[in-house]
Length: 168
Image 1 (spheres, helix red, strand yellow):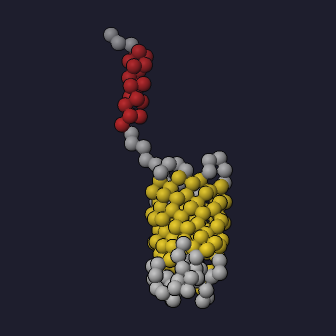
Image 2 (cartoon, one colour; image 1 turned 90 degrees about the horizontal axis):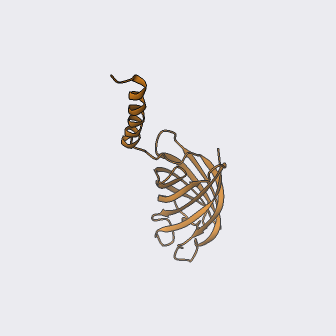
Image 3 (tube, helix red, strand yellow; image 1 turned 90 degrees about the vertical axis):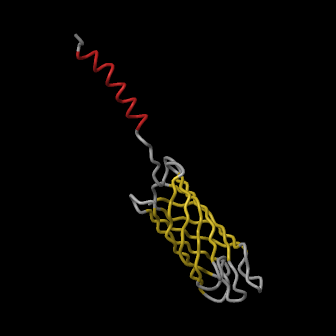
Protein backbone atom coordinates (compact mmCIF):
# COMPACT_ATOMS: atom_id res chain seq x y z
CA UNK A 1 0.00 0.00 0.00
CA UNK A 2 1.21 3.50 -0.86
CA UNK A 3 1.99 5.95 1.88
CA UNK A 4 0.29 9.32 1.48
CA UNK A 5 3.43 11.46 2.02
CA UNK A 6 5.41 9.61 -0.66
CA UNK A 7 2.65 10.02 -3.27
CA UNK A 8 2.39 13.75 -2.57
CA UNK A 9 6.17 14.04 -2.71
CA UNK A 10 6.11 12.72 -6.28
CA UNK A 11 2.85 14.21 -7.58
CA UNK A 12 3.12 17.75 -6.19
CA UNK A 13 6.40 18.71 -7.95
CA UNK A 14 5.18 17.04 -11.15
CA UNK A 15 1.92 19.04 -11.05
CA UNK A 16 3.82 22.29 -10.46
CA UNK A 17 6.17 21.52 -13.38
CA UNK A 18 3.31 20.72 -15.75
CA UNK A 19 1.42 23.86 -14.72
CA UNK A 20 4.53 26.01 -15.20
CA UNK A 21 5.22 24.60 -18.67
CA UNK A 22 1.61 24.81 -19.85
CA UNK A 23 0.78 28.28 -18.48
CA UNK A 24 1.27 30.94 -21.16
CA UNK A 25 3.20 34.05 -20.23
CA UNK A 26 1.90 37.38 -21.46
CA UNK A 27 3.99 40.52 -21.41
CA UNK A 28 2.09 43.60 -20.34
CA UNK A 29 2.59 47.09 -21.63
CA UNK A 30 5.25 48.95 -19.66
CA UNK A 31 3.50 50.63 -16.78
CA UNK A 32 4.10 54.27 -16.21
CA UNK A 33 2.55 57.50 -17.14
CA UNK A 34 5.18 60.22 -17.44
CA UNK A 35 5.96 63.81 -18.28
CA UNK A 36 9.26 64.48 -20.01
CA UNK A 37 11.42 66.90 -21.92
CA UNK A 38 14.00 66.61 -24.65
CA UNK A 39 15.12 67.78 -28.08
CA UNK A 40 13.15 67.65 -31.32
CA UNK A 41 14.40 67.93 -34.88
CA UNK A 42 12.27 68.81 -37.90
CA UNK A 43 13.45 66.79 -40.90
CA UNK A 44 11.33 68.61 -43.48
CA UNK A 45 10.55 72.19 -44.48
CA UNK A 46 8.06 74.15 -46.53
CA UNK A 47 8.78 75.70 -49.95
CA UNK A 48 10.39 78.68 -48.20
CA UNK A 49 12.84 76.46 -46.32
CA UNK A 50 11.15 76.92 -42.93
CA UNK A 51 10.27 74.20 -40.42
CA UNK A 52 13.41 72.11 -40.28
CA UNK A 53 15.93 72.33 -37.47
CA UNK A 54 16.22 71.84 -33.73
CA UNK A 55 13.80 72.69 -30.95
CA UNK A 56 12.48 71.32 -27.70
CA UNK A 57 9.69 68.92 -26.81
CA UNK A 58 7.52 68.49 -23.74
CA UNK A 59 5.93 65.01 -23.78
CA UNK A 60 3.13 63.56 -21.66
CA UNK A 61 1.98 59.93 -21.65
CA UNK A 62 -1.04 58.75 -19.69
CA UNK A 63 -1.14 54.95 -19.63
CA UNK A 64 -4.62 53.41 -19.39
CA UNK A 65 -4.30 50.51 -16.97
CA UNK A 66 -5.52 47.11 -18.09
CA UNK A 67 -5.51 48.20 -21.76
CA UNK A 68 -2.63 48.48 -24.23
CA UNK A 69 -3.62 52.08 -24.96
CA UNK A 70 -2.05 55.40 -23.97
CA UNK A 71 -3.12 59.01 -24.35
CA UNK A 72 -0.15 61.13 -25.43
CA UNK A 73 0.50 64.80 -26.07
CA UNK A 74 3.66 66.46 -27.28
CA UNK A 75 4.35 70.18 -27.47
CA UNK A 76 7.06 70.95 -30.03
CA UNK A 77 8.73 74.32 -29.62
CA UNK A 78 11.15 75.87 -32.12
CA UNK A 79 10.67 78.85 -34.44
CA UNK A 80 7.01 77.79 -34.41
CA UNK A 81 4.94 75.88 -31.88
CA UNK A 82 2.72 72.82 -32.31
CA UNK A 83 0.75 70.56 -29.99
CA UNK A 84 0.26 66.94 -31.08
CA UNK A 85 -2.26 64.85 -29.10
CA UNK A 86 -2.46 61.18 -30.07
CA UNK A 87 -4.02 57.93 -28.92
CA UNK A 88 -1.58 55.04 -29.17
CA UNK A 89 -1.70 51.27 -29.27
CA UNK A 90 1.17 50.00 -27.11
CA UNK A 91 2.91 46.75 -28.02
CA UNK A 92 4.97 45.37 -25.12
CA UNK A 93 8.45 44.19 -26.07
CA UNK A 94 9.47 43.46 -22.46
CA UNK A 95 8.36 44.43 -18.95
CA UNK A 96 10.13 47.79 -19.37
CA UNK A 97 9.79 48.50 -23.11
CA UNK A 98 6.84 49.36 -25.37
CA UNK A 99 6.78 50.04 -29.07
CA UNK A 100 3.72 52.01 -30.10
CA UNK A 101 1.87 53.60 -32.96
CA UNK A 102 -0.34 56.60 -32.32
CA UNK A 103 -2.81 58.56 -34.41
CA UNK A 104 -4.00 62.08 -33.82
CA UNK A 105 -3.57 65.62 -35.06
CA UNK A 106 -0.86 68.25 -35.18
CA UNK A 107 -2.16 71.68 -34.19
CA UNK A 108 0.26 74.41 -35.25
CA UNK A 109 0.16 77.93 -33.82
CA UNK A 110 1.28 81.05 -35.64
CA UNK A 111 2.65 81.66 -39.11
CA UNK A 112 6.16 80.24 -38.62
CA UNK A 113 6.36 76.47 -39.21
CA UNK A 114 7.06 74.19 -36.25
CA UNK A 115 8.91 70.86 -36.70
CA UNK A 116 5.51 69.43 -37.79
CA UNK A 117 4.36 72.26 -40.04
CA UNK A 118 2.24 75.39 -39.74
CA UNK A 119 -1.31 74.11 -40.16
CA UNK A 120 -3.60 71.60 -38.51
CA UNK A 121 -3.05 68.15 -40.00
CA UNK A 122 -3.53 64.42 -39.45
CA UNK A 123 -0.54 62.86 -37.66
CA UNK A 124 0.92 59.41 -37.10
CA UNK A 125 3.36 58.85 -34.25
CA UNK A 126 5.47 55.66 -34.03
CA UNK A 127 7.79 55.38 -31.04
CA UNK A 128 9.38 53.47 -28.18
CA UNK A 129 9.16 53.97 -24.41
CA UNK A 130 11.64 52.43 -21.99
CA UNK A 131 10.97 52.49 -18.25
CA UNK A 132 14.29 52.44 -16.41
CA UNK A 133 14.21 49.62 -13.85
CA UNK A 134 14.29 50.54 -10.16
CA UNK A 135 13.67 54.23 -10.85
CA UNK A 136 10.96 56.74 -11.63
CA UNK A 137 12.52 57.59 -15.02
CA UNK A 138 11.38 56.84 -18.56
CA UNK A 139 13.26 57.27 -21.84
CA UNK A 140 11.09 58.09 -24.84
CA UNK A 141 11.78 58.43 -28.54
CA UNK A 142 9.39 58.85 -31.45
CA UNK A 143 8.71 60.36 -34.83
CA UNK A 144 5.74 62.46 -35.86
CA UNK A 145 4.56 62.38 -39.46
CA UNK A 146 2.06 65.16 -40.19
CA UNK A 147 0.31 65.03 -43.56
CA UNK A 148 -0.44 68.16 -45.63
CA UNK A 149 1.22 70.15 -42.86
CA UNK A 150 2.46 73.31 -44.63
CA UNK A 151 0.40 76.25 -45.88
CA UNK A 152 3.24 77.19 -48.24
CA UNK A 153 3.79 74.04 -50.24
CA UNK A 154 1.42 71.45 -48.79
CA UNK A 155 3.75 68.51 -48.11
CA UNK A 156 4.34 66.15 -45.26
CA UNK A 157 6.25 67.28 -42.18
CA UNK A 158 8.42 64.83 -40.25
CA UNK A 159 10.06 65.35 -36.88
CA UNK A 160 11.97 63.09 -34.50
CA UNK A 161 12.22 63.64 -30.78
CA UNK A 162 13.32 61.93 -27.62
CA UNK A 163 14.04 62.64 -24.02
CA UNK A 164 13.81 61.75 -20.38
CA UNK A 165 10.58 61.61 -18.42
CA UNK A 166 9.54 61.34 -14.79
CA UNK A 167 6.87 58.71 -14.09
CA UNK A 168 3.75 59.61 -12.13
